[in-house]
Image (cartoon, rainbow, N blue to C red; front, side, top):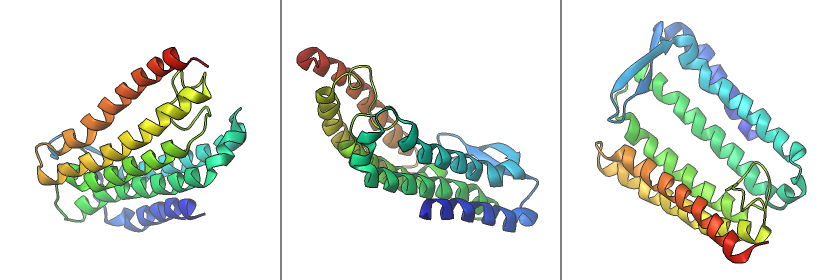
Length: 206
């Protein structure tokens, strides 16, 4: 599977570059993109690949352990593409500290903007296709109680997540406001969808 190949490549890069990396690597940047946190190179090189592998195992298990796993088969190809996209996103995330230590300089927030934009947009596609299940989608007490509420919430949610991805690209225009272009739309839309699912349940019931 391509997703697993990406994870193995992450580990391979870490192993290859381990002797070249300083003992302490930059591992965190503030909201303005300034480096403000450090970690031993073992963590800097291998933490995200390890997290990626654990997430991969979880995603492989989800279609088998979900009580509503029959519904997952209805959008399985979109779910599999999401796994691949998330592993690629984490791979890119892992590369940024490495490139920094190799001498490249960039605003970390703006470097992340395109990656978040693509991820949010594809989440919108996945959400539009998702059927009721316990792991994937907008899971509120009201969407989980009604297929009708689930479908209405996810149709709107898919559009809003796509819009979030597009809006986040505005972060490329300003270093100072890049972080806000990424996080404010997705947080606002998520809160709105939580409330929207409640009102749809009150309106439509089961």
